[in-house]
Image (cartoon, rainbow, N blue to C red):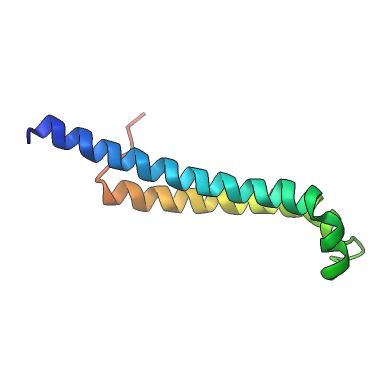
Length: 94
């Protein structure tokens, strides 16, 4: 196999792993923001304790989804750093 074919295969595996992680993290964001904030809000209000004076479902819609999004960004950064190291990718200099 030529160097170009090996490089193309490595690049393909890198992007496949990248897109898989991206889909998983976007799915988690979707579940937290839409699921906890809208779809399961009433159930969360009944089955989880209040956060301060706000019912849990309302809190998830207002604050929890934002906090979850920030945590997902941090997770994405760490996952991509490990993925870049695994595939020997270096950040492009600016």
